[in-house]
Image (tube, rainbow, N blue to C red; front, side):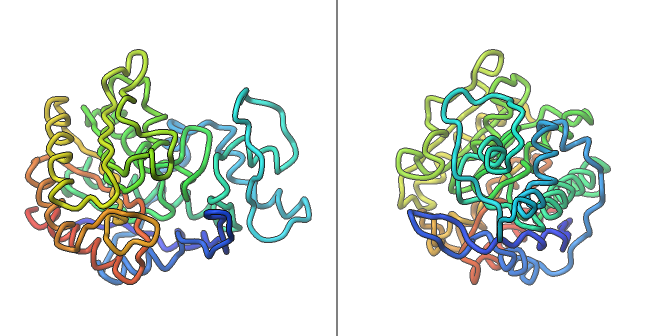
Length: 339
């Protein structure tokens, strides 16, 4: 069993977020990762693959912004974490903006994803954690590897952050896997929330299948993306499959959607699956509304293992911190048990 984690990911520790019109304690806290590490036990340290795999997915101006955003916030005599307050809903384009407030709006889409002093370091090592897991699979050391990524990544687009995400770990791994000749590569996102950033990155790409099972965006974040009629554009038409489900969904209703997802992945002929895992499917999650019990994570893992695919798993959401570690451990033990 290959499990990768780097404690530098804990450097990201914003104090608060804006949620439903009020300031609340930041949900995506370091204790999330610590609870998973405690439940999983020994982990492998991340290796540094440099900036090139990140730049293959993310815009260079965006990466440059992430590196300096908090420093520029402090230089502007602000306090605490950097958070945007104005966004270009229309006419979004590359402008030569100097004020930090303007750049925060240019490179983000919500007010719930602050940039703290340690955000760049943590996000960088989150991506390197995912790349290390891929490297283990690529080298033949294992057919399945789990990357304990934190902060998560699937809401981050090519040049924007949001939804607690800064660098898109799953997209970085998928693009690097394809570059290494490990394709065809498919991405399956099973987080409660739609992976809008991953979809956006590959939406016009005919050679990357993206499948997402998630809460109906008619009722849940990120609202504007993840509807069933979003199937790709241009050459990528048909390479995106969205399977939105209603609030209250449990395993019995979730499994048929998983069947559709796995059928699509098999028809695509994938050799490698990049899995965005959200443990926010859990019934006790404070910001999600599916009804998975712990045994349902085991059932999910068993179905994925039965696919026979090589799998690199990148951790995404899950905010019931007290139960999070045990839920993830149940999934990982089942997925990796047959190796």
